[in-house]
Image 1 (cartoon, rainbow, N blue to C red):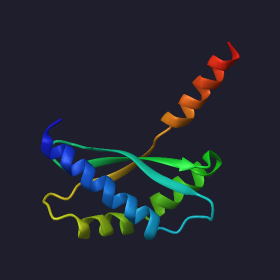
Image 2: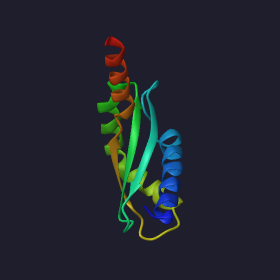
Image 3: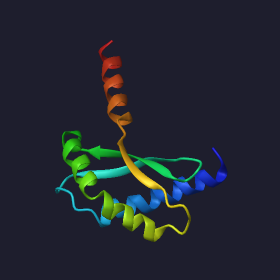
Length: 109
């Protein structure tokens, strides 16, 4: 991955974190964090990996983000000073829950 893409990923991660915490209304007690950003080399698309707590609210949160996607994309576009502006796609990051499951299984052994 080039240094430019790494910087862009970091910038998008920072802005998306702010947008998700300040501009999107979720149920009380639902927390969304941006765990990783992966932008394509041509800057056309960016995958935003999110962690959702509690896990039982994943479906609700994903549906809410999909419903608000146009608004979220617009807010991100206003913050980014670059062309082309990457189209965002959300992916749920299940790494932490898988790690917890593996840890639980190892303790059982």
